[in-house]
Length: 403
Ligand code: SF4
Image (cartoon, rainbow, N blue to C red; front, side, top):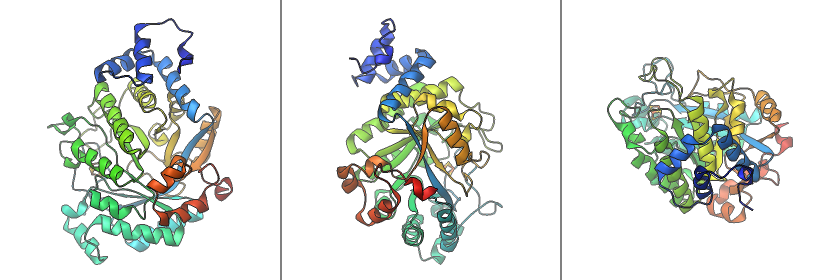
């Protein structure tokens, strides 16, 4: 029986031969895969993606109940779509003290959060004297030093599990975070270097050079750190670039097995940014990118954030995703403050209407916990007691913990 029996009733067209080759992981040029994704009927493509998701995850969609600790929002780079980055004199600039970060984690614990998402701009200490002074006052030289120390405090005082996204960290920096972070996050965004060209989204963001990002993803693999990465869709790339990026992530995961989740995020133009007048990605293009990720990445977790499509996010369940990412009952999405998260109750309702149960997961996915080889290979021993307190035998958060 063919793996894709949902197609067997259809007449056999040449494009289906391409589909079968993709699904059987036979070699195809990127352009051929892209042409197939572009030309294949969207509804059928989404059905294929959904059926692949259902084979692995038939009933459950997950999210991570988190607090967002916006540690420092100064950044040495300037992406053309970003409103997160602030200047030191801006009213919204933030440089938290450890006690402030801990208070957020403690408040999250009261609301049964299990993830402490720690976010910073890219290496602010390289550009801003204010950031250097902030670190110096706390006895640290780099943001990574500070996060390693803070992560330990958060674990000990609250049991929330740190997951840091501080941009493109070096191998040394990542190794400092391994014993306090159950996983790390860093968006690839896209593997196309054309986005670094003058007038493009990453012209003023050298850390978004794909070579830099790939190096960080490789370092995480070599260090055996589960990592969340992802693509930002609609920032000047095309479908070929998206497919090439997905295949790159697949190749890295094939080598290291450490990609725990791939976020497919829709670009949303924001007032006051260089890209404020850019169009967001079309619905069909975005849905096809999600489906392509599921079809090419098979059982890797695929997330689309619900808050960036507040009225229509339920349709991503029809495109093959299995996760909604971090949702906070306490803190805003500081990266996209224009788009508040829906309530967990609403996400549960929407997910239920499509026939799925919503379950809370940790910032490390069950397959890194429940498979003994992965657990020993990827998870630092000192983190295991914190993880095991929170999970049931599926590796998801105990239902009774969050009730
Ligand atoms: S998206 Fe990240 S790297 Fe780019 S400017 Fe914003 S904070 Fe800096």
